Length: 285
Image 1 (tube, rainbow, N blue to C red):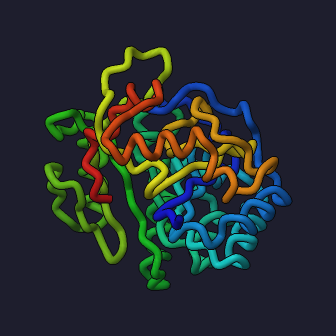
Image 2 (image 1 turned 90 degrees about the vertical axis):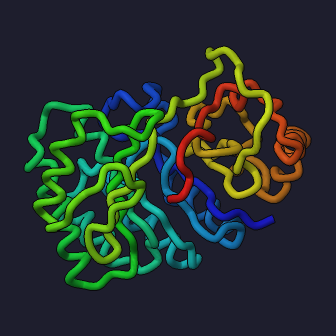
């Protein structure tokens, strides 16, 4: 089995408290470099892409380059997701330096969930990074994400200042009805609907339906817990620990195989999956 994407949480720490994100963070802590190396050795050939995110912001790590080096040594193609609050010169240089970084996702909704920085203060390092990215003709893609539209794909009024700002900076007319607005070479404003994170306390509503979990994707939390997808941020569907058992053997566990086979029959047998609404999002990222 080879996945399209494996999510790896380097830490569940982000330093923010955004409305759209699960509140329980900074519980598991940081996956050490030693453990990341053990992990990379097991899974480097098990996926096409490795996303350094479930919860937390990888750019908050002062030794991030050491993790990037390990990933490069194992020829792991990376995707980085960040709030945009930690775009200092050091991190910008790292993201431009490592050619195995395929995509950088910047969640612009994080700006809308705080009041510490002005729009200009928040965007200044991000725009400088974009300019360097264009100057260097990097092969990676930058996704500026606004995943806060309603079910009718209408943006909240708070988005308007971001549309105006980006339109002015990139000299592009922004169509807020589009999933993707191409701002410049390899730089995209990507929009999606706001989804509700699944929660075991919610009433189960969705007993049938396909899912990409365990077929196209799987996730690993910073403490080594294997979870079926990127939305199980609390490890509610614990499929074992990769630092205690081999990754390939965990894929053959009874619980994992039962969930996977049920998905193949359009059935959701886990309570967490029965409250998941991510299938409503436009999945053409």
